[in-house]
Structures are given as structure tokens and as C-alpha cells.
Length: 255
Image (cartoon, rainbow, N blue to C red):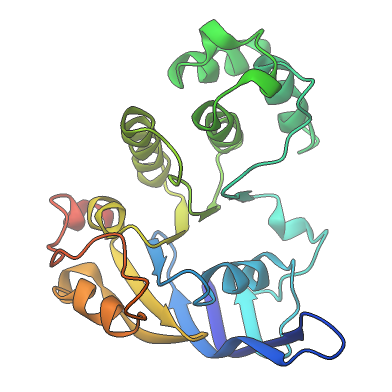
């Protein structure tokens, strides 16, 4: 599904500033059907790697292939790919229903009204369909993005810190929706530094530190994931959880 080999991304923040090595030889493989977690400290290179997978950023050197092709903007093989950033930027004057209808139309396929209404009902947005996005909570905006994945049967979904800033109830609802999308056959790649989310959702994990993968395996084999992650962290920035990770109860169903 996704293969990255020795990816390097270097850039400068200003003309006379020191060069930043965002990725420093990152290599990993994500298989079809995985719920794959990229875990590491803020600044470890998780989002940069995801931008390379999406074709939004061209690596300085190295090779990346997504579904057997080199990623590039506008490529037709991205029709089955979705990306939900940590903070989606919508046209805030649209209502929930208008936004769902408009963004789904960008795929070039007409979506029946019944399908849109059913999706809004399933995500708990039906009662808010006339509410403008400017007045929606972050969790509601995330659901508008997830609605596109349910409407168009997304094959590959990228999530960048999807639960940051959500209240506990919204996190639980969001988690159940992701399980549904995964069980329908989608491959999911999620950036996070919240170890509890990995424990409940992922079947495979890559730990990233200083722009490279320091560990990659099945979750059930990384029983001391917190030790691996925190051994790469600075003392002033520990990870969001310090528990030893145990395999999820549904690991066999997700692998």
C-alpha cells in the first residue's frame, strides 16, 4: 500500500537560518488493510512523512510509493484517498448539510440526498444540518470530514492528530466511526502521540524520532511501546501516556 525508502526532507526556515532536517532517512512499509499508527514526539517528523505520502511535499531525496505509484498532486489514483488534518479549514459560511453536499461533489459524482441524510444521521449531525460551520465545535467539523469517507468508500485514509482538542464523548464517537471505516476495508494511517488511542485502534505501529523510524512492528509485539517512545523524548516533553501498552482486544480482527 505505502512504501517509503530512505526519505530525507531538508529545508530552511529563513535565508540565514540553519537547515532543518525534518526527515533523516525514514523508511517504513504500510500494508493494505492496516490501521497503522505513526507515533512520536511533536516535531519528530510524523506530519512531514504524511505530507510526502500525500504528494503535498516532495522529499529532498529517497523514494515513496502509494498504491504502487509515486504520489503527485492531481493524480487520478488519489480518488480513493482522503486526508483529515488536525484542524480542517472549511468554507465557514456553509451549513453542515451544504458542506457535506459540496465537498462530496468534488469527487465528480452526484450523491443522492438520501445518502447524505443517512450519513448525517449516523454521525449525529442531522439535528445540526442547518448550523453554519462557523458555529460548529471542532468535533462536529471533524465529523463533516469523516462524512466524506463514509459517502465515497475511502480506500486509504490519512489522519493527523485527529482527537487532539476533542472532549471525551467526541473522542469515543470518533473512535467508533474509525473502526467502522476500517472494518469496511479501508487502510488507515494515523499520526498521534496519544498512546491510549494506539492501543484501542492500531494493529501496526512505527515509532518516529528525529526524522527516522526507530521501531516498527505489530502492536502485539511492541509490549513496551511507551518505553521505546519515551526513550527518544526529551525530559521536558514526555509522551501523553506512560503506561505499558497491551494488545487491543480486537487485534486479531484488525490485523
